[in-house]
Length: 165
Image 1 (cartoon, helix red, strand yellow):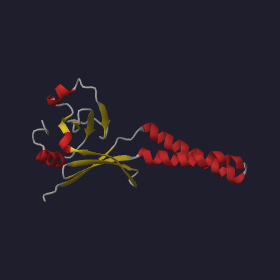
Image 2 (tube, rainbow, N blue to C red):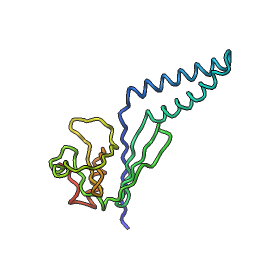
Image 3 (cartoon, rainbow, N blue to C red):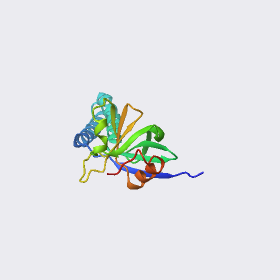
Image 4 (cartoon, rainbow, N blue to C red):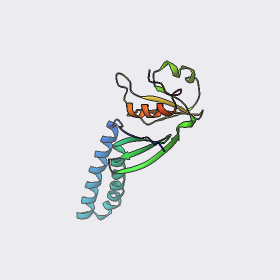
């Protein structure tokens, strides 16, 4: 059996508002907890939930997407704060319609479709743009930012559906 394994990691662009919110909730949580422990104990009622909110904001402020290609299947995982991994979805590449650069002319016939768009890329338009659009199962558009090795591996199993232009 000839199995191919390719792994690709893409860091999502950080949102300045999330950084501000993270800093604000941490500072407020510390202030309310210290105030509650020293002078006014009911302030702990606000401090503990703020600490929990700060934890979740911290986890979601630093996100990376990991693409795993194993034997005709593309798995997308979300790595939060470089410590927690969550499997988002899995795509059977035999049901893929097309995979091409996001600004390719080959996607022109797909532009007028009303499909659900999911973005698993960094969110940054680079020069040249390295993001790819994959139309899947007739009703989904997935935006990814694959490495050249990942594109080559997918092209090996579906040469007429993958374009690099």
